[in-house]
Length: 114
Length: 113
Image (cartoon, rainbow over all chains, first blue to last red):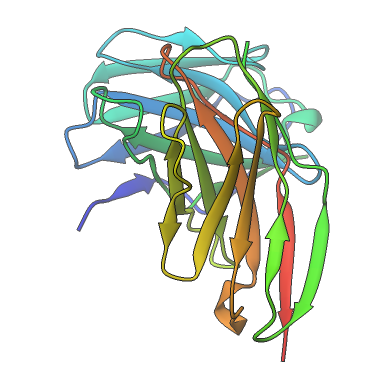
């Protein structure tokens, strides 16, 4: 059974804190993605990675960074959390070969910044 | 650049009815795939159906089918004989050569008993 696991379902952090969101997949996928989901805006791509130590900016990378030191793990970092980063964060992974490959998602982390 | 637009924020139908969700997209890629994903209240995203841009035949998966109009850049999802378990957010998405998977704004579908 394929699995993408996000470290927390719910998280509350204070403004200015450094926040780490962790994502692990057990499918040996090359691609990994971080999205944020907001009502009316859908899923917006923050960063994605197609290999270890490789990263590409998505549509809304400002205020975020990522780390991929191992193939199975992709971390999203909020360097200094702000209230406008309160959102649902979704991690996904997929094979690199073929555009048709399905993306598998974690269950999301609902982050509240107070 | 890839963009995906879903213009129906919410829809509601009665059980057993047929419903169509709309999606338009824009891409500069020659080859690309289009997807519909479902996100039920559990928040777990699930692939519903996919369509290759080079294939003229519309994809079908059981009660789910698409109407792919390449020239119009339209990719709608039809759900036949809708069931209570179809209640979910539905997202249209596209993927091109750069591997980016881009989503639309989503449509919240409610199936009423």
